[in-house]
Image 1 (tube, rainbow, N blue to C red):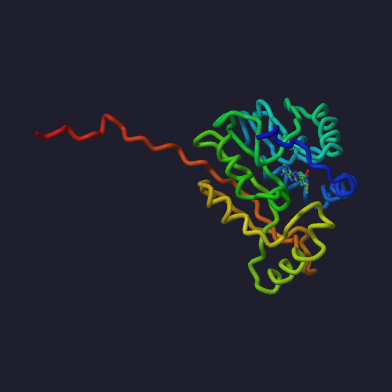
Image 2 (image 1 turned 90 degrees about the vertical axis):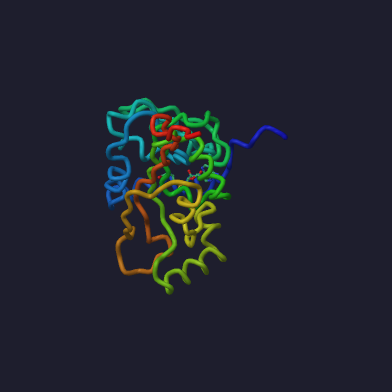
Length: 230
Ligand SMILES: C[S@@+](CC[C@H](N)C(=O)[O-])C[C@H]1O[C@@H](n2cnc3c(N)ncnc32)[C@H](O)[C@@H]1O
């Protein structure tokens, strides 16, 4: 087996995202990032960090962030943003499906607008499950499959035609909440919202913002074992 790919070049999308994403912050995305990261504490892994727009939203209880980003142009911008952040952030190359960290080494994992874009969503979530400690959290802000059949139909058409090409491999019809549960996380907090919040049926408008917990390992407590009756 060769060395795993740590880079994913999408030069056109990267420049477009670097231009458009800061313009969405004052339109409400900045507030959603605050909500995404409220109460985060300890060691954090952020996967698909893009140009680092979450970095200014980490609370002071965050001891250290390892931000993984495979696209070199966005990673360069993230590195600059990390230098300005008030918490310690290390930006590194890597892909979601093969995170360069030991199992159980993080208190919190963070994904925002990433699970729509990864090639193997299940593999990415399984890796997050692996590196988050038992009892730790996955914080997510993702656009997800619509709950209405009409918009879901629009999403399927978009995904089968131009959307992934236009939006850096993004898919709009993924059932990301089911995928999060499928790998073993328990979704404990969930808010569904639309962004942008207007009546135009934008395929990527339905979002889910929440917290999923990696359950504690339950081992039988020796103190509760019944005495052996012979
Ligand atoms: C829409 S951008 C979101 C960036 C950032 N998380 C944010 O909230 O602004 C999607 C990001 O996912 C990254 N990405 C795509 N495929 C990935 C993969 N397999 N592993 C890790 N990141 C990936 C892209 O390079 C890009 O930075």
